[in-house]
Image (tube, rainbow, N blue to C red; front, side, top):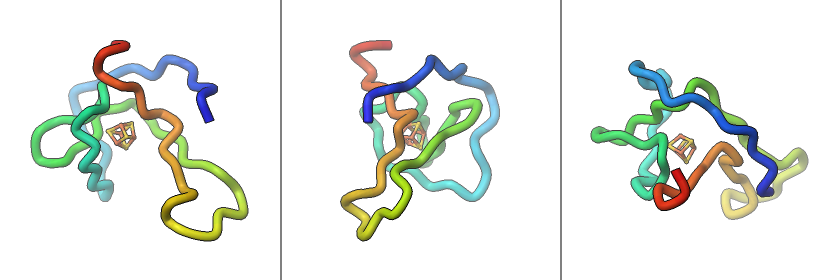
Length: 62
Ligand code: SF4
């Protein structure tokens, strides 16, 4: 799943989402996600390993 469009980083965190992926461009201290919106894939997932935040963007590519 590498089909992301560029999402803006904004000043308010997404509520009710805890994300610990500190290597993501959108991550911030306190396990917050600062992306304007996020997309989780895929349909019909069977376990946690299969579910995936496709908005994830590694910091080194930001
Ligand atoms: S975009 Fe996804 S991986 Fe990145 S901080 Fe937000 S929820 Fe976490």
